[in-house]
Amino acid sequence: MHKIKTVFILGVNGFPYGTARIEKLKLIGKSLVARDIHVVFIGNEWGYLNKGDISVRGNYEGIDYLYTSGITHRPRSFFGRRWIKFKGIVNEMIYLQRNKCDAAIVSVISGMFFPLFFYWLYSRINGFKLYYPHHEEPEVTLNTKNLYNRLNVFLFNRFAWKMLDGAFPISDYLQDKIRKSNPGLPLLKIPAMVDFDIFGKVSQWNGSNGDNYFMYCGSIVYYEVIEFVIGAFEKVTSKEFQLHLVISGSRRKKEILYKRIEQSPKKHLISVYENLDYEILVQKYIHADALVIPLRDTIQDKARLPHKIGEYSASGNVIITNRVGDIPSYFEHKKNALLAESYNEEEYSRLMEYVTLNPEEVKKIGLSGYETGMKFFNYRNYGQQIINFMETT
Image (cartoon, rainbow, N blue to C red; front, side):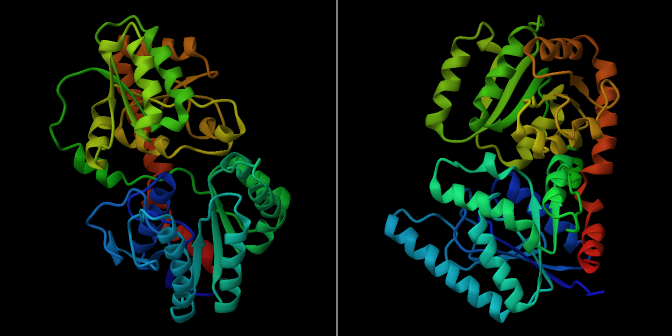
């Protein structure tokens, strides 16, 4: 058995402020740090969401990090970006040659074979194990009309699962698909992860103004889902409950959302929030009456288990969702969540109506959902499991 002491996280940029993928990797890193593993997050470009206080090298919540590009913010110049990318890749190669690790978690965009292939080469040259956290279907992540992307996806599906030492699928769907490609590849399923400690600290704040509201949090990329939530809310008879939408993404793409809200008969009850600090976002979760996350009957939603599921459960408030993908593996209707049978506005509206009429029962369901989250989604539960997995594969 090979003892794990140092783990590198490679292939993704944006630490520590970024997407759900960054947050998942950060929590994997924190779970290992809590078990006395030295974790280094290595980026070779820059972070799109990085704030001004992030230096090129440092330590964040116990995780060492380094930007081999020498910068943390996106350059304005096109040629400047090309140069920085080249510089970052070269410096990353030099760093991996000079600094040793026992294992690396590589998180290239799902379906991007060539970056994964280069990290595989590094791992074989430098003698470390390589693991891949699989979060999404490659065909969904990449635009396969692009010839380069189509080639990447083809090679990824054909060879990726034969190159790795192990993988961390997020769902049964992805786990089963990997097994069809390589039945012998060691797998450790890691679902949505969340830091329950933060929710415990924020819950002590007095931030509620007494409003009753449903809440949805997501990217404007999922506009179809946002419009679905608005449509379901419009059918709720209560004139007291509000709908709070916390939406990320470009301002230009949000204009269509603002136009949709302006046409709503309940526009005075719908609020949109943007660019919230994480502590404020958590505070909104905690003070919501119900947290809504509709899932479509698509490969994308079957394959993934949204990061928001973990955060919603940590709030202690009831989750409204539907039976897609891994949801039935963790939740039962009216036991620890409110589950619609399908992606249907009428069904969601009835569940939202139930929330307005049964506050005591809904609170009990939310607390059961919290217990489910503590059992399955708390990042602290996974550190030793990951170490054991890496040491025995």
